[in-house]
Length: 222
Image (cartoon, rainbow, N blue to C red; front, side, top):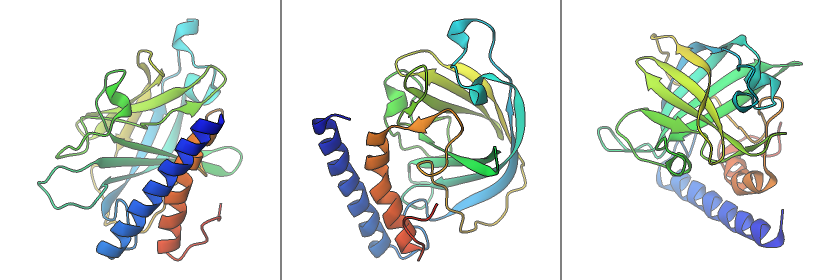
């Protein structure tokens, strides 16, 4: 990461951490961001990519078929009361080898090649969400997306600036459970073969550490 990029990421991280602290002080809650939500069981069914090089990411977790149980949480980022628009979040936790798990965090955005990187307030979860910031993989930067279809979500991936490629379907149990204090962190927990860029980590890590401190957790805990 270049010096200017590092400086921008550091500055952005400080701004996000400051905003997280202010939210925590203004609205006492166990979680300063996405304070209330709904938990549900689900299953992520990965269909597998085709044989064409353009259809494959080079990441086995994205390219190979599979099916994993999932923990799903939907929430509103700032906790504004309905029906006011808010940034909606979709958090997904799936098991990964050898004995860990991966957290995927989607937020409401547009679906086009530019809009997928811009947060979009909506009145409900969807219709389109993305991971907003890119992941690093062997084939270059990529982003994940989700399109709501009833109670399910069609999950896709795309190289930055490229078209969406279907990954699979996130099937969500219609029976949701009362919210619980579950901490999702895509910086610490990510799928095999894709990792956050260092500048993304710098941008987010201060806010996540601040959020963990607000819950009385060790901010460096894995």
